[in-house]
Image (tube, rainbow, N blue to C red; front, side, top):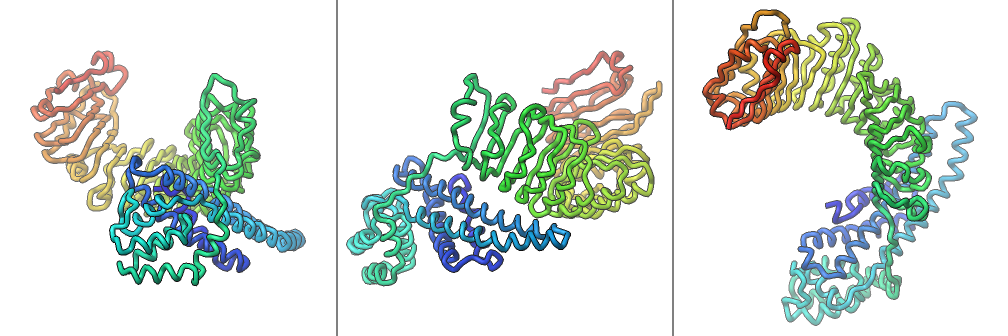
Length: 601
């Protein structure tokens, strides 16, 4: 719906926020905001109605008007955001000052500058109000279509279905003078009235006396709104033509809201200072190790999304803490040793933080990460046997996705890790990579909300009791390592109603004799399983008729001796699926003549 209505869905709540007391706006400005609210709500309703009309049924006037409204909504949101960010910025700076004299100077400066900010928003509101009123007038034909569509729901007709009301409706449209907002406002009122001619005449007579359209008309007639050809979305891609001296240098970046840069066009990235209202900056796979500097990234105060994955950066500037509106930060697959301490300032909006490095050791986080309470996704948090980081992780109770890599060198720290993980009761996707001491996850209990669990580099003594359908009913992905898998465990796993991916690794005993453990997959078990992978020390796997009915991929890592003696069951032969069998150890791959496939068609 945002494609149709532009910024209106997010803009209307912001206008309501401006009316609260903390912004201390003048009465004139508040009146302008109330006017904008009413008019933009009407515009939003009109755009939604237009979106329900087939494109071939829309008139050219409707398409142009819809386009102009969307462009106008973007401009209004940019103005409102600029005002709100400046006010919030001053408040946050005040809160961080610690010394008396500096604090007094800063407060005095703010007292002097805040009236300037409010005068600026007052000017902006007047300008926006005039632009709202400067929408191109409609001819009588299109005015009728707009009026009747709003009242009767007719599409593309300029005839009133009620002949008795045709005369008065034309008189009403004459007073509206083709102003779309006036027509929509009156149409909304007429829709609540009866179909009596006298009721409509009452509305017609009230238009001039109640002055709810007269002012609009006086300011509107003779004006037209000509939106500039502003660049809202910028995509820089590979080109054989060098644009650096032409379009790239002359085009205005002031109204660009999102910028996506491909690696082949890294040299065409405009300077950060040229962006004023940028919300999204995505530069994945662009080599930023030479040339482009991120030092001034903190000036993009409207930025919501910053994607720097695989950009060869080695540090993140401290100015990142100035991005108070930032909701997503991705610096994964880089060699950034540690995040700057200013990252903890992003406590108001930051929801997604991706910091995984190119090796096991991703970026270290500073103290204070517990303050990022709005975080919903965190990947990959690196804990280097740090008690503080382990304890702070437990404060991020809003997390839904957590990918954590830990080096645990003591039992005490392992217990702290389990305590922190058990506090995260909203986690849906949990990935743990564990290095160091054995047995640290003994007391781990996944939350009922869990949908995906991956635990690598750690082997449970046996399948944890809490991994069962009664506790984590919605589990759909499980990757786990266990010393021993009992037949009862396989039956328990087969009862999960939505389990789709299962990867189990059993303890590998390197011995010359073939393993003897045999597993039976019961009929009707694993009803939704799509992929099954089993590694380690085991004998045959027997599939009963009706087991894993939706399976599309089976991967069994087995001993070559077991492979030579393998005798697929009838159920395995009749399933119309593709199966792959692999040898478990390198020395047996040659004996098994590499990977073999069974084509079951």
